[in-house]
Image (cartoon, rainbow over all chains, first blue to last red; front, side, top):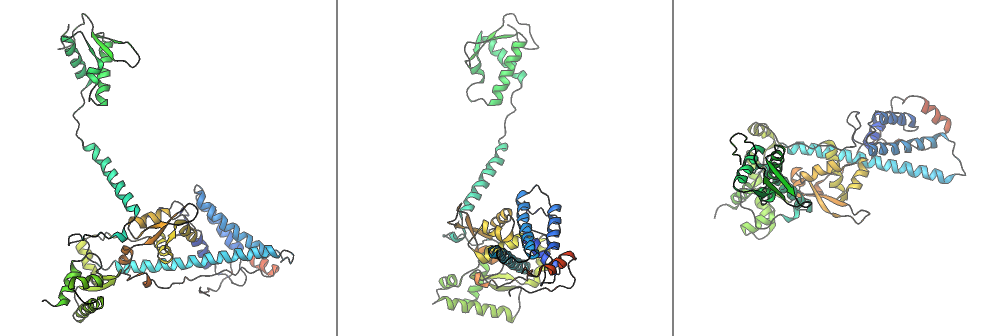
Length: 251
Length: 202
């Protein structure tokens, strides 16, 4: 699983911007009193370069983070401007936001670790896997949701798709067979309609074979065809005095 | 009339899902659910007195008969392959976000993780650990997600109240503006050694 398309950062086990930032904060054993934001941004940019930029969404997320850091960094370097109180507020708000996000992510990470440990613990325990009792009248409705209907439908459709090739088909007649057939019909009658050969319930593949057979016979000069109107039926006629071909009877 | 404790044992054995005290009360025609709980307690005591291969676990609002954890190696040998695939770290984190903040929408999950969680979420849905709980009245009316009963069972939780309060360990870089000269000097040098790690939750 975990095919999160934007987890393309190929460095260690990082999973996202907050993951990365958290890691940077942790490994970069910094004096908290004075933060060397530059080293963080530098590392950040290095990670950005190491990243596959095909994934614009992820790259964008990283860039916003990096830009925020650089902005905060710049606030550190520029002497505080008393006239520009507002901008300072902005920086503080940004800092607060970043801190909050980091704190929240750190919590989620810890929670995830707890779930992981719990999962491991539970993997040692086996319960009854399947129902041995007949189904209760009432379905456990509380655990159903719309997406299960969708899933069931999808599965049905998939099954249908897979089932289709199982319909065993008789070998479609070859062109040669069909040619022989046409000639044998023409032995008894002078002309026939293409629709009578290919119409009705015949499959598309058979229609194609019939058409090829007719074309081949025309090429060999054994029949004539006429079509009086566009998309109209094709009249097939015996060509007088055709030379015999193999066992096919001639006129 | 057989010993009601035996009946409870049989019920738990035959149930494939956690059996609620209320259901036991119904089947045994007991006065109240507490009486059913007492019977389960008595059964648990019996199991503890003389250890067996099984134990009774309270999970997802009911009781469940499970094998004892220390017997796992033999069961693995029986099954040859443990088919239960464990969740990945993104999977666990996404699940944690949903478990603690439910109902929660995907944009909210993405915002916490800082990355797109769609595939991870799909996997959780596939495993029935979470489900769609409805829609959020927000732009785009995104689906909101919540955990399922299967989630409680899979993680051995009685209910959501069993989720512990967890704070992550967090180093918050001090971003307060310091005197510019000092900051410059700090910026020039490499990350100083011997920094402090500050536990979170301050």
